[in-house]
Image (cartoon, rainbow, N blue to C red; front, side, top):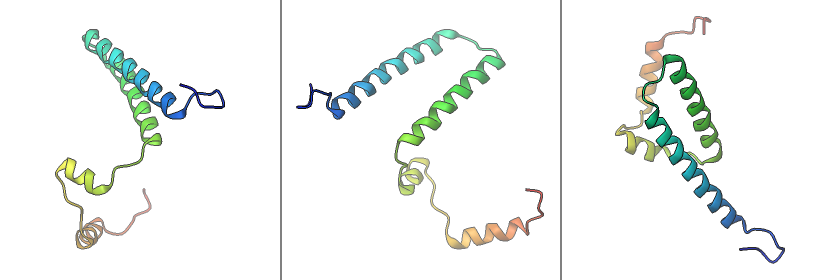
Length: 97
């Protein structure tokens, strides 16, 4: 579908891009399951690529509200008192970073 100006509508183009990306990820997933055993070095290289992809994904998506994060992880947010207690246990900074 095109807009009156003759270009693709952004919504359609974005949907097509996402669909293409999903198909490519499915291909990668099948390839990874067919690889079998990776050496430590190969696994490290793959992990680094996955980390870069995850970073890129985080850059283009909005973060979940913290409440949703805690619900998914089954945790509760720390209170001000909890934070103060933790800071007290850490002690003063020693400059060694």
